[in-house]
Length: 320
Image 1 (cartoon, rainbow, N blue to C red):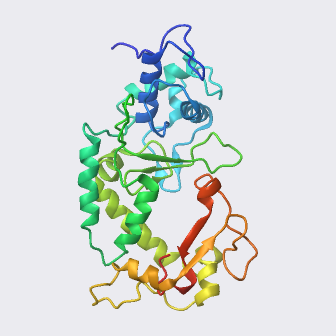
Image 2: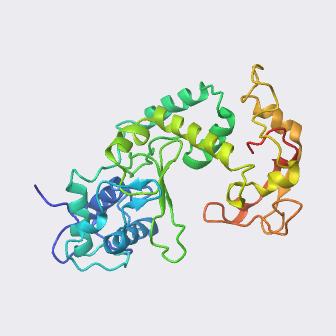
Image 3: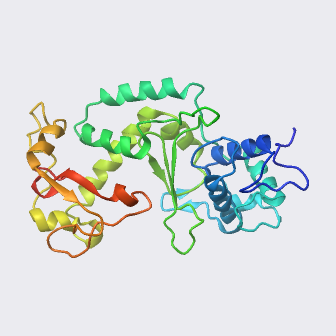
């Protein structure tokens, strides 16, 4: 079996590397399919590729396959195999050999791709639009999917980009180890896993199958609704809801369950609630706190402020 183009004596890839388009593209492909690169197989070694290499190097040195949701099928550290690896963001030959070994190993499950992601995503959007559920509000879910995945199960590459792999979101929430990927969200519903790599059944399930991905998102959202709005402990209690509405029974919808608008007519509910402007670093979470909405890694700059947002305090249900 031939070695990938990025495995070559003396070769080191990094930001600023030129003339190695085939090697960079193969490295990006393997970083993508092993779950380290968020997007783009475009033969340009930019910030995203450097960050992916750092995350891989971190796992080769200190990675743990276990998460709060169990363990992955293999620990990334085994692929170091005694090689001298450092967290640099540059693909030296030690790191390259590790990446090639992971990509070639059938025991390491790989992200799926779609030959025609545009058509696959169009079919997914049609399926989601036709969904009905008595467990969670589909319009609310669709808005979340648009925000989290662009309502896509697979990446739709632009010209010069070969990325057709499943959409992936990468969280870096360990402030002491910013190179570490703390969780990954997969597909249209961003099915979240805290262990890495995924298990075979997870690849075959929500990561490859949009219907199971969406079903999982509905289940997760309902579970959070049931457990983390009026819970008995601070960790399971939405302080804003307690301040605005008290700790009474959860309100799944303003309409009764036998009403055709139940868990579906959220446009009317949002319009009836009135609006507020959210200004980053100024607007407080609720009237009983001085803490304000602030930019995050997900919402930076202008995205952290929102004009004419439906007023959660006057919503007649507890989903927002």
